[in-house]
Amino acid sequence: MGTNEVYDVVVVGSGAAGAMSALRAAELGLSVLIVEKAHKYGGTSATSGGVMWIPNHQLEPGDDSPGQAYQYLDSLIKTPIQRDRLEAFVEHGPDMIRFVKSLGIPVMASTWPDYFFEAPGARSDRSIVCDTFDGRELGDKFVLMREQYTRFKLMNRYSMDLPEFFLISTRGAGWIKALLKILWRYWTDFGTRRIGRRDRRFTTGGALMGHLYKQVFDRGIEVRLETRLDEILVEQGEVSGVRVSHFGRGYDIQARHGVVLCAGGFEWNQELRERYLPVPGLTRHSSTPEDANRGEALLAGLRIGAATEHTEGGWWIPTMHMPTPRVSNFEEIHQAAFDVGRPHSVCVNRNGQRFVDEACSYDEFGVAMVADQLKTGANTPCWLVFDATFRSRYTAGGFMPTALMPDWMIPADYWDHYIFRAGSLYELAAKIRLPYDALKQTVAKMNQYARSGVDPDFGRGGNAYDRMFGDPTVTPNPCLGPIETGPFYAVAINLGDLGTKGGLKADAAARVLDEDGRPIPRLYAAGNNSGSPFGHLYPGAGGTIGPAMTFGFVAANDIAARARQAPQAVTRKAKEVA
Ligand SMILES: Cc1cc2nc3c(=O)[nH]c(=O)nc-3n(C[C@H](O)[C@H](O)[C@H](O)COP(=O)(O)OP(=O)(O)OC[C@H]3O[C@@H](n4cnc5c(N)ncnc54)[C@H](O)[C@@H]3O)c2cc1C
Image (cartoon, rainbow, N blue to C red; front, top):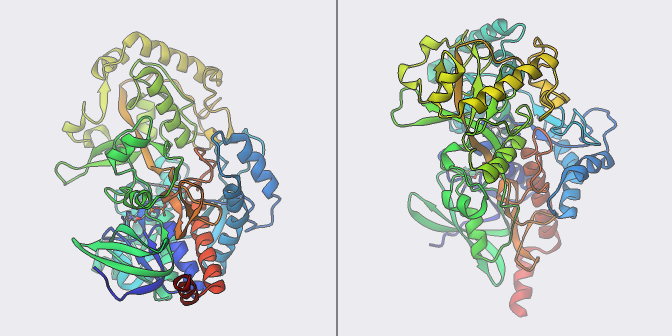
C-alpha cells in the first residue's frame, strides 16, 4: 500500500474549496497534491453559477461592514452555530477575495439582492461573479474540466453568462441579438471547432474554475484524476496522509503538514440521505454531477472520530427531469429555480394547495417543500401548473419557451410523462391526479391576486428578490399573472439540491473537530465536506461557494502558519523523544 510520495499538503476534491486551498497553500510555499475521484476536475463548482457571497468584500468602495453583515445574518440564522466560525467567514472572506484579485482573476460585484431582502442589513452588492475565461488557456487540460451545467449552455452547446442566461430564458429585450452573437462567436472559432464541440468560452462556474485552475497549473500543482480517498491515515494521534484508490488499486500518500478534505457533500449517497435528512429525497433529483459526491470523506472522517454538524440540511433547489436526448434510459435534471415564480403559474402540493411564495429563493422553496411534506405528506414532488401565456414566454425546467421549443418539437412520448397538457384545468387535474375543486380554488385565488397585485397568502412578488426574476412587462405585480389561457400545462417539481449543507464539524481555522470538540491534528475540511458556517441559512447568491473558498483559504493559511512554527521533522522528533 505504501508509496514514497510525500507532499506538504494533500487536498481531497477539486471543486472551489479544493482549488482555493491548493492554490493558497502553494502560494505560501508548500508542496501540494490534489486527488480527485472523478475523471474530470472542477467538481460541482465548475458546473455552477460561480457566484460567491462575500459581505464587506470591498472590491469597490462601498459602505458594507462586518456590523451590517452580522445584523443581516443574526436576524436570520435560527440554528445554533459556531459563532467564531461565522466571524472567521466575515473576517477572512474579504482577504480571500483580495487574494483572488491579486492573482489577476477578474472578479466583480454584481447587483443581486440578498435572499431575505426585507431583513435588516440586507444589501444587493454582496454577490461576486467572475468574468469569462478562455478555456483554451488550460492547454491539454481544456477538455478535462467539468462542463458547465446544461442550462448555462444554450442547446447544450453554447455557453451563456448569467446576464445572457436570464435574457434569453425570459426573451427579454435584445435576446435575439444576444443569441446571434453567441452563435457567431462559437461557429467562427475555427481552431476550437477543429478539436471538438466544446465552447472555449467558459462562463459562470466554468469561468471561476477556469481562472483558478490556470493558476493551479501554472504553479505545477498536480490534479490526480480518478483517484478516490478511501481512508484518512493517522499516526501517533496525528493525521499523516490518505489512502486512495485508482481503478481498484489502493495506495498511500503522505501529507507532512495537513490533509484538507474538500470532497463535497453526500447528496449522491442515498443511505446517508436517509440517515441525516428529515425528508431524504432522491439522489437522482440532485442537480450536482452524478455520482461524484457520495460522502466518502465524511465517512472516513467519522471512522477516525470526527464530529459532524448541520447534516439535516440540503442546499435545496426545485428540479424537474426529462430524458437526455440521444441516450436511452438516462434522465437529465433541470433546475426550475427561477421558473416557479414567474407569472401565469402556481405551485401546488398534491392536495392542490399552495405552500410557499413561489418566487422566493430556491433554497427557501426547498425548505418549504420539506416542511409541507412533513406536514401533509403530499409534497415532494409538487406541481408547477401554468397556462399557455407562461408556456409561450418562459422556461419550465428543460422546456424552453415556445419560440425556441414549440409544443410540436417536444417528442410525443414526453407528453403525459414529463410534461402534461390539457384543454381545461379539469382535465389537467385528472391527468396529474389532483383534487379538481382544490386546484380550481387555488387558481381562482391566484387570478384574483394577479389582478390586485397582492398575494395575501404568501406575499409573492412583494420584495426585491422576488421581483428580480419576475417579468417587468407584467403589471401590477411582475410575479403574478392570471392562469386563464388554455391549454393548461403541468410539470412535476422535485426536491432537488445543489449539494448538502452539513458535514464534518470544523472550527474557525477549518480544523476538523472530534466528538469532544478538540481539533484532530492536521485534518482540515472546507466546502460542503464541512458544516456550513450559516447553519441552515442560504443568505444570498454565492452562499455556498463564498464560504467554501474562504475556508479553503483559511485552512491553507493555518497549515502554513503551523508548518512555519513547528517544522515536521522537529515535531516528529519531539514526539518520539516523548
Ligand atoms: C447548476 C448549479 C449552480 C450552482 N450555482 C451556485 C452559485 O452560483 N453559487 C454558489 O455559491 N453555489 C452554487 N451552486 C452550489 C455549489 O456549486 C456547490 O455547493 C459548491 O460548488 C460546492 O463546492 P465544494 O468545493 O464543496 O464541492 P464540489 O465542487 O462538489 O467538489 C467536490 C469534489 O470532490 C470530489 N470527490 C468526492 N468524493 C471524493 C473522494 N472520495 N475522493 C476524491 N475526490 C472526491 C468530487 O468528485 C468533486 O470534484 C450551484 C450548484 C449547481 C449544481
